[in-house]
Length: 356
Ligand code: PMP
Image (cartoon, rainbow, N blue to C red; front, side):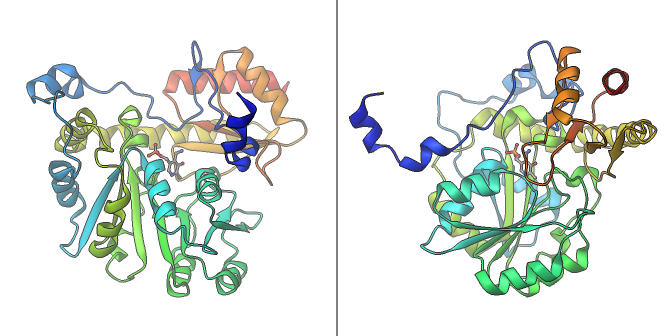
């Protein structure tokens, strides 16, 4: 790049690390919390063609049909509305952009989903990280104290949390809601595997927004997330999303998926069963410490040894999981996504070999 061009670029960009996605070609892919099952023909191209998506036209930027179906599916009351994003990543970006006023702060427990901080940093928001306790529960006293000190504009709470896989105490979350002036976004990306939600509380707290995604329940390739919140807030957020942020094919497939909700729900239930089986198998491996999971992934720690080494040994066996070691406070932790029974068994065997 020419020096002059470099001068025009924001200096902070050169310090940003790219979001690392390892090439999954030829791998058993257990790194990204995807649903491992194929999606039934009903959702594939024939049915999309039959449903006539006019790709010569721009999509419906307002996602009217999809939002109508989401409203029914979540029984959302009329004073709330929905913002659809190109993945919930985009919604996090829209939220951060909307609240990126000078001196505003985003507050999150730590460790949590890394995009909250990456995006907050990028748009120039202050970021306040509140370390979780050793058992990964919320340090509610510290959190309330930090809320008082920093008066955050936005708080992201992944419920259940990624990468720790646990649900935080509901009463503690209510305390957060009651003691902040800012918006609390409950990110329920893994809600299908926890059975818990804050959606029923949405009319009890003016500052509560609930975010969900299609990514973990079988449709990660669509890139579709949605945020449910009070109408006037959604109206403002809608002004800053790009006009056609969600393509027509994704909208249509999501609509078909909602018409066949039982199909994907059944897969999520099956994944919960597979998770429990995988957890049991992992608990028998004495060289690792395994944490309970309310999600479709499991966090574990290598007790005596290095997570990097185990991760690389698994890679040699063509098994791709997530190495959490670079995350502060998660040195020697690894995260595995629940796969099919066959892939989980291959993973367990390879893990045992690697540890010996
Ligand atoms: N929230 C959490 C807690 C996540 O773990 C992820 C993905 N890893 C996302 C949001 C982003 O999901 P999407 O695919 O909808 O962008």
